[in-house]
Length: 95
Image (cartoon, rainbow, N blue to C red):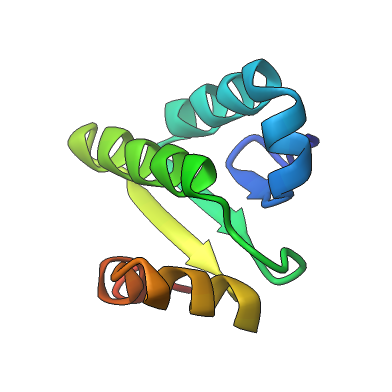
């Protein structure tokens, strides 16, 4: 998983699941910037483990006074969030 910059992460669920340590390291680095932008336009679906990670990252960055943005979620991501009842949770922070 390769961040586009320190604060922007490209959401690639398969890569995040294949190498969770790299995903966590990139998330920690992004959280340290104070703003986390997750680019979600290319991901087709969102496994529950990845949603848990996104919730954790959002809570962590907001607890530190930062900002979390789920950017341009694909239709598949929107559907995954809807099925899990999380559309509203992420809608307010979608940029």
